[in-house]
Length: 210
View (cartoon, one colour):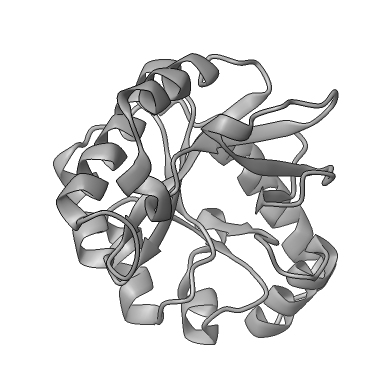
């Protein structure tokens, strides 16, 4: 799977995994998608949304589940967010597709959940990671991957093992090439080398039937 940008909201993006709410999935030829219920929308999530998620997870153009996750600043109470995250993980495990998560001020809960539900068939990536090196280590030690965008913490980027690093544009007004160049500068490496690493990692992540 030849993908560089592991997470974007740009519906016209190529070479990318396009993040799509379950109610807005409208696949276009040649595009790849992730589908999920964002933690900001967990208060409105219904059993119908979960049934739709389980159905869309089987679609051949859906290569990942999410974004899902935990956000202590927005969305439903954390116990409701946790319950929905567990449902996303269960669906991902069933279909053998990795999980892409949004995590805001909930890294300890996220790491604990991922450890508690191990072993896993699939991988999980924290998208748009902006935490520091200490938080990065907590998540990495729990078995998570980290996906970095234009805004990132330098210590976290440099401390993340090359084999567990992903790149993304999310909703930033920057190309994936610009993001890769910024991450390469942070890590003190050549952008071409980092692009090859991120592309290989994306393929490994998306094929991660562990």
